[in-house]
Image 1 (cartoon, rainbow, N blue to C red):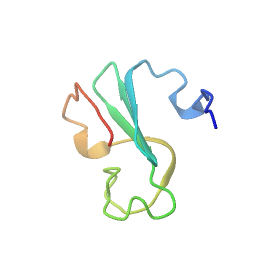
Image 2: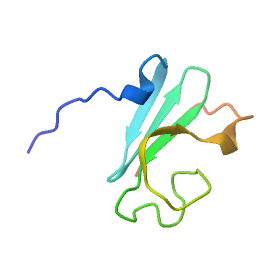
Image 3: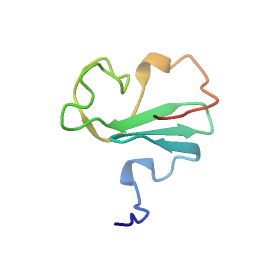
Length: 78
């Protein structure tokens, strides 16, 4: 079964430089080095893998505030 691209409303207006996808999580990097993560639904964020300080799934992209003073340059998902 094929997958088709989908517009991510929460990223409209954000100039992304990279996007990575795992099995149940997604990561986007903007041109300023800010990191956004989402996914982890159905308990697949059970160890806080999304980086938001909790173990809840995230339906829409959310900036990882813990990296606020850092400039991320590369991303990958596994």
